[in-house]
Image (cartoon, rainbow, N blue to C red):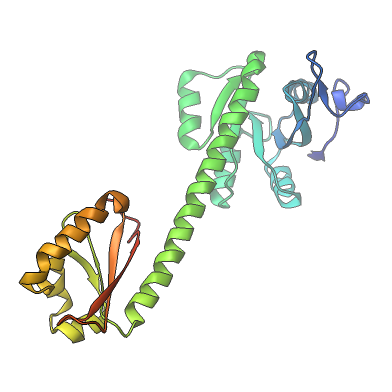
Length: 272
């Protein structure tokens, strides 16, 4: 059964609230936190208790109750949810089956299991299967902190994925510009001064193969008389460049090898 936002007889939604905000004795108003919860539960009474606990915790609730696999899939297709709160076992469905369905369909939603009775071995198995937390129905005071932890984990994971995607896109753009640049370019490690990458123009200009470059240091392609000045320049900049890689672009200049323009940036997502 898929019953979106269906209040039970004891559901606070059945009674109009004088205000959509939570009033505090200190004289200011706190807006409820929007939360979309898919509740997997066969008992309307237990659902009403759960909804009351969530609203009492300061959530502006949108919810639906389901108790079969088909109803859960229909609810997931119907709208976007923030979290799933599920009973462990029901006559026609179970939390392990719900976790399996989410995994099969690649749906990334936090799941909190609430049960009247659950042994430690079952709880551990549930966490390993993908649940974020498990609670006992008589102890719903832990529900709000459990939800906040689960949602925080989602936010942190999403932030990491966005950062990784941005890094991959940045690296892709860098490598395209690096490889196609007509000027000799290289990347070297600020700590070891060893080459990490060179472009085709550098190979053609200096006559070394790429593998030969990668066995050398930046000092190996400078005139001996220029090395002390190069090392002094690198040392003077090192405090400001710690944790980044130095990219050098060689172009026309007064020295034998030509002038050099340097830019700094992360390379391959690595930090020394």
